[in-house]
Length: 86
Image (cartoon, rainbow, N blue to C red; front, side, top):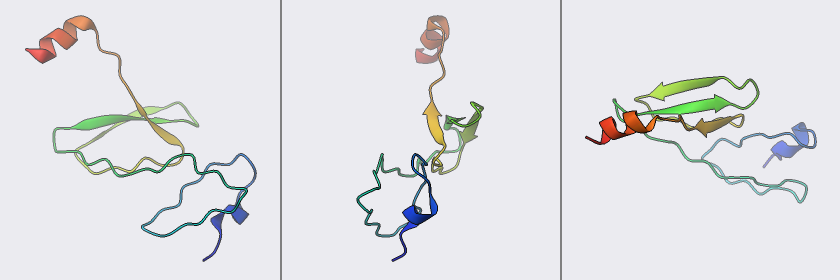
């Protein structure tokens, strides 16, 4: 198997897409393992691009965060939260 780490510089983050087996070299640190997020037609998530800071929504599809993305939580006012729970 080809080692993907040889194509990157120290401090770079990258994602191994699979399914596949990956045995990292001693120089590679695995930060996290990601899984797809299945969303129904009326479900959505906010995704933040860590490079640009841009936030976008993903609705009604199965989504796998990229290496430069993170889930973003939107702050909701208590009044709106109370209405949503009714």
